[in-house]
Image (cartoon, rainbow, N blue to C red; front, side, top):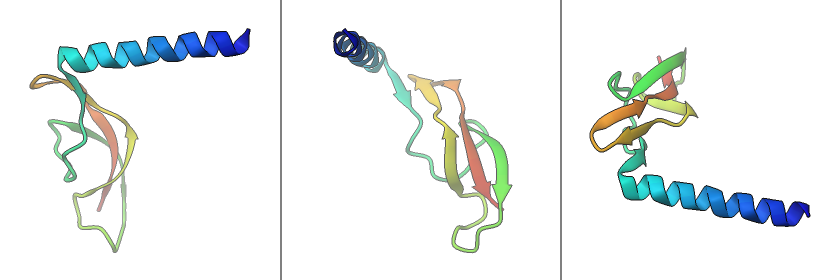
Length: 79
């Protein structure tokens, strides 16, 4: 019973992702430098290996619909 439920849930999940992708919703992934138009900084960390202003970690994915931000990505930025 559980396997049938999980299979149905996964099919619904895939169908929803395909619908959103076909509708023009996409994940914000191509920007590596902090940009307040696309990101929300939730923390800053000293990092000798990463330049200041570069994104270290994405805590929550952000999404865009065509050219409009639906939800900014929550990120940790290097000091």
